[in-house]
Length: 213
Ligand code: FE
Ligand code: FE
Ligand code: FE
Image 1 (cartoon, helix red, strand yellow):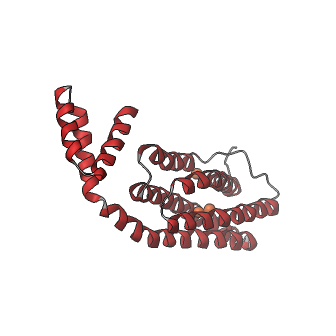
Image 2: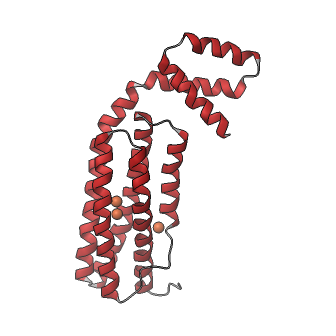
Image 3: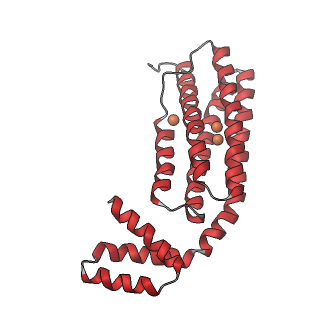
């Protein structure tokens, strides 16, 4: 779509957000499934429902403009969601994965806040009051979701840090994995034998990671 006027740019931005919301709504169920914290799961579930309403609002905006909503893919949202989903494959489920997913979700919200902020400003400048109001409602929801996630992160991060010792060991394991050959691996396995089950779990995820390389 050629962009030659502010109208074109405004429409382009709206199509971008529409694509972003559609992608988010498809990804949330998978993320919710991977999350262990009930609080985080619930926050995601709530935002999934909210997002459906946000898409309806955008449908109304396109109706008012008498334009089609499709035709653009938000590459930024695609990348953000890919990064979040990557964690599901890389990190074993538990508080550490929850913390990683929460970080990903907050990036998504921040991206949306930036995007809606822009279109609200355009709508205002163009004197499109009704559209401005619709977009402002969503902007507010995205901000509230971000705040909610910050609240949830306090507990999630605490939990993840509670396993912090084990995380340090995991990093060491990884370093060893990179250097070790034959004999050293056996030596390490002996250490693992004496270690607590928690450490074994960390080892397992380190193995999983090196297998991916
Ligand atoms: Fe949204
Ligand atoms: Fe985008
Ligand atoms: Fe959102």
